[in-house]
Image (cartoon, rainbow, N blue to C red; front, side, top):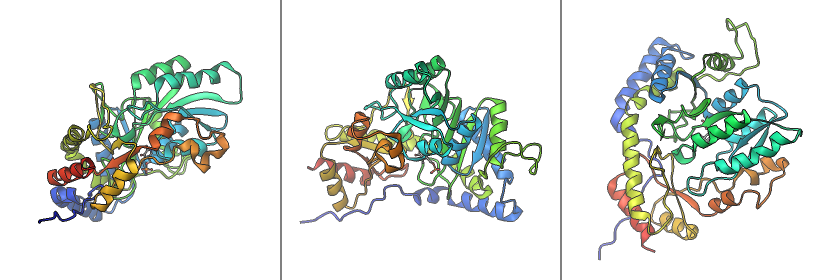
Length: 378
Ligand SMILES: *Cc1c(COP(=O)(O)O)cnc(C)c1O
């Protein structure tokens, strides 16, 4: 009898893309080595123009990471001690970390179990007490996260923000290129932050990020914050900032990647559609509203038999990952906020069942069939 050999499938195969545009990337890198402008070289401006065109936002300010993008956005609003910033506990630590880093207070709001994004109804209920009482904290802003590449519900969130006079910063670290009602992620809030960490849907070969906004004054402020709070020139410092620049080399690497990104989004959606079609009888597959499009930073499913399924995947050479095993309100780093088990039951329940499958534009059809079969052959 013939036994099928165990395949070696990667969770995200970053090499596959190089077969397609490796030449262009190498030639762009050579271009930077040629001119030697490693900091704020011409590729940085070229990339910013291309990114803002792609997103449809007036301004793009590239920066050193997605974390810096979020931090700089909060700094642009002068966020500090006494400010309450509302966000989700079901996200990567960076979303809430930057709030604490500035001395402000993250206030968590539970998620919608269908989208894993912040629940706008719970958001309204969570903000109300801060605005009624004259307590210690002042409600300032909201950071929704476009988890796994699917935009949050910005119409509902925007209404809440308008009612309470709050700013909205989109954490689009996982959603660059996604759509919400015909608008691109990155253009769904007052300011948006994204990340080009290698494993994100649009990734560079190191750390990188970008900020988007439509307001001229905010853009100027962000450009100043990016370079030590510079004023008219480098040694004129008008505010406290940081060293938050994107390397020229990373900008050069991102340019050819951005050129094929639209096509890669289609490929990602094809892989996702194939998973959903074949897996929905066996696990809870992701929900995407008809007027939204995900870029599938992760293809995440849910099952009460998670441990059994992921063990079976592993023994067949298929990696999986859990995003996120422990919601932020349960992390020791945020112990001082006073939350505990039971504070956000939806996030906690999802954390106990969710897992992500291999996902990248070039995931081979046979490999995907093998993954599906391994899950369905219980
Ligand atoms: C990756 C990520 C970040 C941080 O981006 P870095 O570029 O790694 O700093 C922030 N928020 C979310 C939701 C992320 O997934």
